[in-house]
Every structure is written in C-alpha cells, then in structure tokens.
Image (cartoon, rainbow, N blue to C red; front, side, top):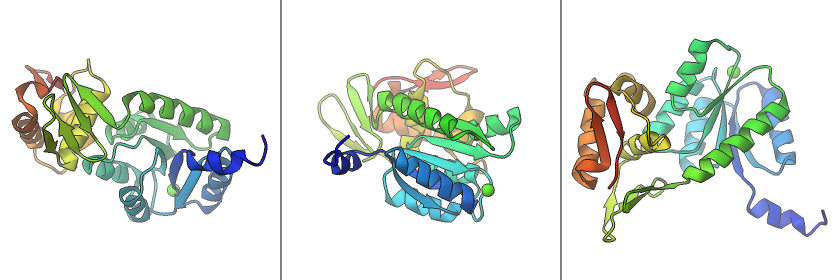
Length: 230
Ligand code: CA
C-alpha cells in the first residue's frame, strides 16, 4: 500500500466509539483498532459516552458494562431511547446467560466476555458492521421509508413526517427482525426505560399508527407486536 492511500482510507474510515474505564484496556483497544483503520474516539465513563454518542455519529460502539456515572447497559438503553441506532458490543467481566440476556435486552447487538482476544473483537466488529449495513439508517416499510438518523418518515406520495427519538427506536427494534413478534415486556426494556409504565409500549404504537397509518405496527393478539408496512 503506498502513501496516497492514507488520506482516502481515513476519509471513509469506520467511526468507532469506545467507552471503557479501564485505562490500560482502553488505550490498548484504541491503538489496535486505529491500526486496523478505524477512526477511534475513546472515553472513560458513561456520561462522556452518552454525550459523545449523541453529539457525533458512529458506525459502531464498544461499551464496557461496568462504568462510572452511567453503567454500560443503562447507557445503551438511553441511546436506544433517544433513537441512536448505532450497533453496540457490550464488554463484560461476567459471562452468565443472565448477563448476556440483560445486555441484549438493553438493546446491544453483541456481547464479549473479558478477557477477550483482540482478533475476536475485530471479527465481531466486522460481522456487526456487515449486518448493520444491510439494515442501514433508512428502513423501507412497504411504500414508505424511515430515516432513523434524521428521524423523518417519507410516505409513498412524498409527505415527510417527523418522528420522535422513541418512535424511531421502537420502529428500529421492530424492523430489525421483520418476521418476529416482540412482546410488550421485551419492547419496554429494550426501547424504553424499565421505570416507564406498563402502557408505554401501547402508547408509542398508538403514536406511530396515528402518524404512519394503522398497518405500520401489527398486533399479534396475545403475543405482542411486529413490524408492518406504511
Ligand atoms: Ca469497567
């Protein structure tokens, strides 16, 4: 590879945010992932992570579970609640099934137990970016599209409809697995804060139907909801 590849590689480099309080691990990941061609930002606590993730746009985030200020699961949940669709890998010192499920429930896409091999992290990052690229930031629902970054839906006749972060977060989760039925508890913990009331999911389904039409979210009686079409 000659020198002229440098700037070009940097321009379309994948942007990655690391949120890890262990200084040694953070520095090590930052160095290795930069060496792999990622554009890396690294911060040491959940509050700084939340700020960065809301201000900047990233292609993928690596978030430690145990963090000062806001823990990794809470951080992931808050980002999903604000409509940030960037895929997340949770790093954790624990490896039980319960922890894994909690991570996925919070809205993370993947989960890596410490200590991990850097090649394993690189492979997971590549897989996640590939998978996410197929979903992208714009989702097509029947004749309409939803831009999850700009939070706007476009109907077949070109009408633009503004959406809230939570409406986008709910749509994104449902659209991530089009054939799957999500139950209310699952949606409440993934998309919304667990402290929210029992009716929060139904409320937001109602909002979405009012804005985008009755068929945008389908009710599977006794089971939950799945994504429909606009
Ligand atoms: Ca930690």
